Structures are given as C-alpha cells and as structure tokens.
Length: 496
Image 1 (tube, rainbow, N blue to C red):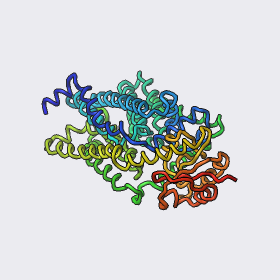
Image 2: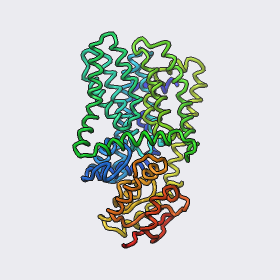
Image 3: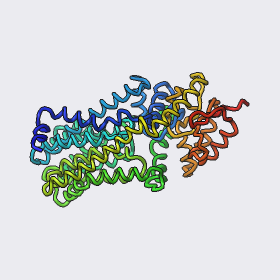
Image 4: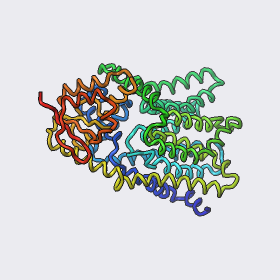
C-alpha cells in the first residue's frame, strides 16, 4: 500500500492515470454501432451541408451536440476510428480538468496531503467515467457535458479564491455553465451548488452580490441569447423550442421511472452498484450541512445533493445519463475519504474494490457483445440490409428505416425520406398523445421525398410494426415487400 502511495505521489502518476484510463475505456473504443451516435452525426452532417435543423431533420436535443457532430463531419467525415480518437482526446481533456479542479478544491479544504488526495481521486474518476455503460460510444451530450461542467467548476473555484479581482473567471464559468445547460436542460441541477455558493459568499455585501450574480448570469444567458437570435433569424424558433425543451419535458414525464421498460433490471443494477460504491462518501458529505467546512462551507454537501437530485431526475432511461454526475461523486469521495476510512479501512476498501470490479465486468460484457454477442450479430444484419439499399439507390434517393436510431442511414450512405431519423419520435408522439402530429408530418415528408425504400424488422411483433398503426397503414398502402435480408424486410415504393 505504501509503495502504491509513493507511485501516486511521484513522477509516474500520469503514466498510471493513462493506464487506468485505457483499461477502463477499452470497451468504449470498441463499442458497436451506436444508434444515438449516428443520429447526432446525421443531423450535424446535414446541418453543415445546408439543411435546416429541426425542420429537414428532427431530434430532441439542443443544437450544440449537432454542431459538434457537424464539426466531426468536416474534420474526419464518417470514419469511426478517427471520430473515436477525437472522443478520446476530449476525455483526456476532461481527465486533466478533473485533476486541476480536485487540486484546487482540496487545497481549499486544508485536508491532509491534498496533492495525494487529488491524484487518488483522479484515478477513481478515470476509472468510473470511462466505463462503457456510462460512455457508450463516446458521442453524446453526457460525454461533452461533464467536461464543460468541470470547466465551469474549475473557473468558479479560481474566482472564489479571489472574488474581488478574479471576476473574469466568474464570467468564463458562466459561459461554460450556459454550454452545460444547452447540452441538456436537466444538467442545470448540477449547476445549483455553484449558484448557491455564489450567493452565500457574497451575501454580506448587497452590491457585490448583485454584481456577482449579474456577471455569472450574463455569461450563462449570453449563449441562450445567441441561439435565440439564430433561430429567430432563420424562422425556426418554435421548432427549436419544441425539440430542445417542450418535447423533452413530455418525454421525461411520460417515460421517466417507468419500471416496465425493457432492460430495467440491468439499468437498476448499474444504478444500485454506483450508489453502493459512493454511498459512504455521500452520507459523510451530507453530514457537512451540520458541520460546515471552514473554507467551503456547505459546498461539498451541496455537490452531493445536486448529484443525487440529478440522478433521480434522469429517470429509468439509460445508464449513460448518470455519467455527467460522476465528477461530482468522485469529488465528494475525495473530500470525505479521510472520514470514511477512519475505521475498518481494509474492509471498506475490499468492498469498494469488489463493487468496482463488478462494474468493470459489466463493461467487458459490452466488449464481448461487440465481437461475439447480440450486438455483433445485429451489426452484421443491419450492414447487409443497408448495403442492399445502397446498391439499389442513387445518392439522391432516400429511404426510411422504421427502427430506432440512424445507423441504417450511415451504413447505406443515404438520407432519410423524412425529417424523423428515428421512428421512435412519431411513435412516442402518437402513443403518449404529445400533440405534435408527427405522424402527419411523417406522411407529408414521405410523399414529398418519394422515398424509394422502407426497411423494418422482419419480426411481426416488433415495436415499430405494432404500436404506430398510422405509419404502418401508410407503409402498407404505399410500399410492398421486395426482399428480406438477415431479419430485415425491405419494402419498395409502389409506383403510382
């Protein structure tokens, strides 16, 4: 144990960090075709090619994730290897930012050996934040969100050290906070500790309080204003608002914490393991409300509470939603570790190592699926069906994949015949009565584009063949079965 401590404290720390980073991230590097990844890429690609976002292609995220993917397209095109190299670089920037933030935070607390604590906590962060159950392919709002969140926190702590003459750091922190919010609105829960602490440290001087809030709010709202002006200018503000905010509110209300969702057991298992690992640290942090730190006050307890509130708000969707809270969980762990390990250190370490090992095995299971399991088989089947469409269409012709996600469009190198890249959006609107009439828009788009093909699962009980009768009625009237390839029916448009 002493030898490991000396390595962490010594000159080989970053080598050890990269080793931990690489071991944890190996399943991410080989993650299979990810449906969400290709949705973001599709929208981003078409946006920079001149199409109108939220009109010509529709998805329910803010514009930043599509802008990022548009930049990916311009830099490396659809090359998945090069894209994942870029995602890795972003993750390494996040690792460096976490270390810088942890050092600053723990120095505030005057804990014993803050440098060692920051480095040990960074290793914990490198392990957890790169597990594939949290990263997926590396391309989503969470993978960008936690990096910007760390940037927000680091800049705020720089300001907090000298509030009177370091206000530029507060402005930068606010700008980064605006980025966090635009990526996903519920990320705002993780900004609450910063905003509350900003009020607490300036509360004794009303002028300084108003000025500090104004600076932070200006930085945060500036980005919202920029997007407001942009979408008003192009005449699509209503579509932007529905996709970024209104649809998501209805989506979370309808599906959040739905225990009947497929895969709920795996999701809850990952959540329980994650909370079990960090529970001792979170409990110690909450005790800080009654015994505040001399320098930071209740900042650490607020970080702990905001992480839990965020995880509850995420609902039972996908475990990658929790990734953006992992920096906070790890910072809480570092801040309270001395208290947690005060007694029965070896026993507690053993339990935590066992939990971490189970989490790593779950990640490796995804690696197995990539090459040998269901994901590998599905990738082969989708590729075969997509290549058939590519071989029987010209680049200007379109088709519709009546499945979740946009992987088919990437594999076939053809565009969707409708703005809805994923069949899930018209289905959700119809099934939960959101009121957006997506089915009508779908039919109008398909009539205008005269999409040559529709591809769907050959399984007659497939979700998208059974739960949206409006779209299926249209498909059955206007398309006929041409062939079946590896579990997918390919229907061709009936000439009229």
